[in-house]
Image (cartoon, protein in one colour):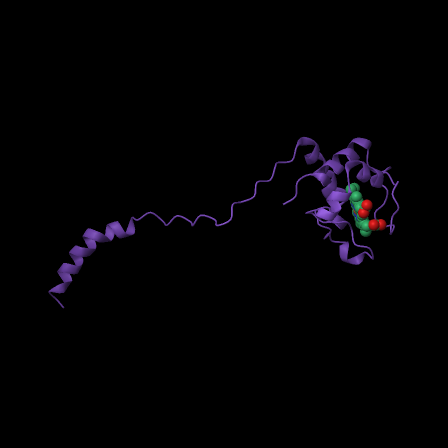
Length: 133
Ligand code: HEC
C-alpha cells in the first residue's frame, strides 16, 4: 500500500489537472425546434398595452380567457387564442363587438365605444389577431 502512494500522487499530478480542467459538458440540443413567433409590430405593441390594462382582467394576460375575473363570470370570457375563435372573428367583427354592435350573451363585456378612442380600438384588435404561442 505504501509503495502505491507515490505512484498515486504522481498520477494525480499528471492527470488530475486534465480531469479538473475539462470543459463543462454542453447542454444537449433540444429535441424539438423552438417555434418561431413573429414579433409584434408597433400597432400590436400599443394594442397589447391597452389590452393588459383593460381586457386582461377577464380575458387573461395570455389572451386565453383565464383572467382573474374569469371564474366569477357566468359566461366565460372569449379565448382569443382558440382556432375556432380566430377563424370566425375578422377585424371587422371585432370592431363591431368593441363598438357595441354585436349581441352580448351577458353584459360582462361592455361596449368599448366610449372608453377607447378609435385608434385604440384599432390597435387592440390588431393585437387580438396577432400571433399567439
Ligand atoms: C369584466 C370582464 C371583461 C372585460 C374587462 C373584457 N371582456 Fe371581453 N368578454 C367578456 C365576457 C364574459 C365575454 C363573453 C360575453 C358574451 O359572449 O356575451 C367577452 C367576449 C368578448 C369578445 C367576443 C365576442 C364574440 O363574438 O364572441 C371580444 C372580441 C371581447 N370580449 C373583447 C374584449 C376587449 C378587447 C376587451 C378590452 C378592451 C374586453 N373584451 C374586456 C368579459 C370581459
